[in-house]
Image 1: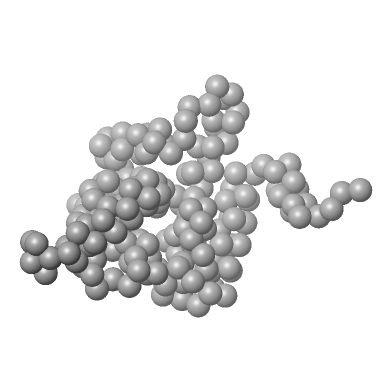
Image 2: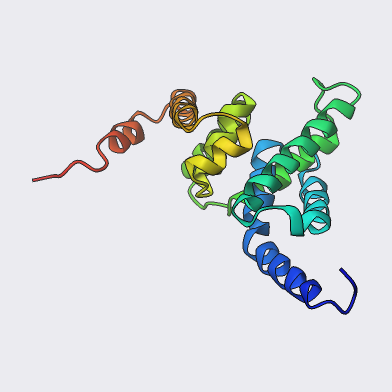
Length: 188
């Protein structure tokens, strides 16, 4: 492509539309799956890579491509940390900031505590369960999630169900579990 090529304008327009439509969702995805890492730089780096590869990334696979790239960048960050088990002051501040980005402050202390507990439970899930659950929350379909995780569609459904069960067991809100299990049932 040359600077005056009409394909350049189309490339820029489709990328810009995609970026503005998906950026918040992808920033939040990265923040949930890696609150202790620099998720913002991973997302920005993934978008730069997407820009460079935009013409060759199939349109239906663009979100999944970006999520895979973000996950890989976050894994690389985690590997570079000196002591992966240590939580530094910087990581603690980043996690608090992540929670503020993801959740508006609730006036009700009980609701706030439940939200923070739920996020902490999600963060502690194994990577494949956490990724499946977070992507489901952000309206990725089974095919997109399977593409990201490199698994079958049936596995995605199992991962999401297991992730929900683990979070529910850890957060321990029995009333919500009962209400959730009654969804879709008709009441007379």
